[in-house]
Length: 576
Image (cartoon, rainbow, N blue to C red; front, side, top):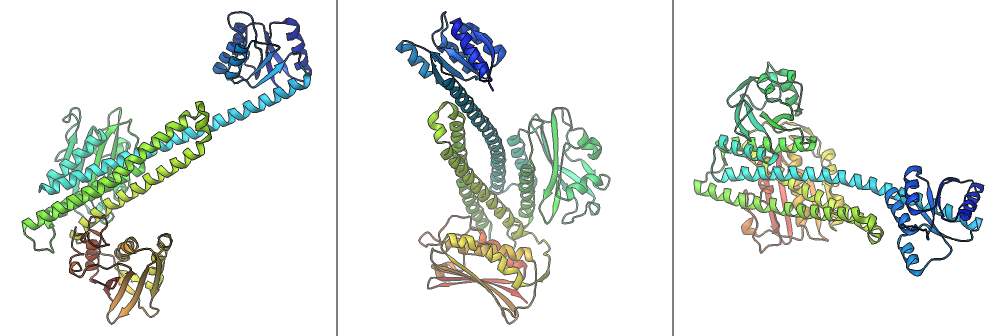
């Protein structure tokens, strides 16, 4: 039953209304005879609903009192009237009351109006609460997307700085210092530093000896921060700290007792300290430290992304400084040209996804604003489902472009590492009959979506292969992705594995496209793109097939290509 405020300036009618309400089981919390008294009673008693006479005497009539009560206290109003002039009735309609009761009252009308009013108000409140909760969830999602997006942009800037340093022939130390400065400025960090271990390509901290700070950045020229430049740390004396980093984990504002002594002075009130390993899955060459204000909210994904990009950049710079394209015998002019082509291609490829990401973020913000204003806009309420669908689509675009950007970064850095480093490969027995079909099957949905036929055949007599499964999977993924990308709709992609004397022959064949014969010898060169006149001209950095060649060479194999009569076959030969 309802708690009711009765507002009626005719005492007899007010008394009769109270009697009927109580007979129906409701409670009259108070009775008022003026607009001002009604507003005060609503504020103190907070009834479930108000039955308001439209024509009240005094400076505030029933319509104005009802508007103030509903706007201030969100209490539904039922108007009570016997007569009113046309202007007053129009004002009453515009105030969107929950119902009208005509004098003299009928008990049945009173009860049904009260029930409808309470039910409608309950539904509206439930919808409003749900909308508020949806809005809160949306704000959280937008904050998360915005944070990931901002860190992604920071990483792109780091890579752009890295490529710039390569283009101006900066040495390793100067280039790392410039990249670290870019990171510090992008994060508004108080202080950043990099260390280098004196032993690399090992996975146990106990096998290492020392870590030396090789470069640092400070927003205020060090200021209150002590300089760490040139400091040498003993890894074995801080074994717990470095064993944690060795497992590719990070330290975020740890207790001072866990930190090496030189780092302890960096932890001051109002700041937070992040320390993470510098390297990749194959090697750890040092660590990176960042001091930011405690207002910055780190997530594991953000830390992992920045750590990976900085680690790969450090490895690439070290390798480039001493082994620039060692298998090539080019002159300086050729190297400069390759660098220029590389930077040009990278700039284009990085810019396109970023532009799409920015547009998606702007559209998400517009939709969010529309949803925020839907309470006061009935038309927006009707279209809320459409707005949510648009929101989901823009978020999907943002995610896709982010993935494209991230994979591009990984490809670029992997090429730098694989093309130069002599990392040990992990040889192990590999059963192709069990290993290859799942790799191909993962791509069948994409092929079907593009109306392509993707098949796989492995010879039953194929012996067990001894190789590095990770490198071989990367090779097959690159060849298959290329085939899916360049095969026209309605054409076929066939993957085969069969023995050929002392070799294993892995082939990826696609129909519907031909590479010009004069270009076949050049497609494995870094940064090379096929001429625009051919159907195989698609955007890319020209590193995919170069990466395939590097990986296959490390596996002591060969990679070949044949293309004619609308059929192209890439073949990987690996020693059995």
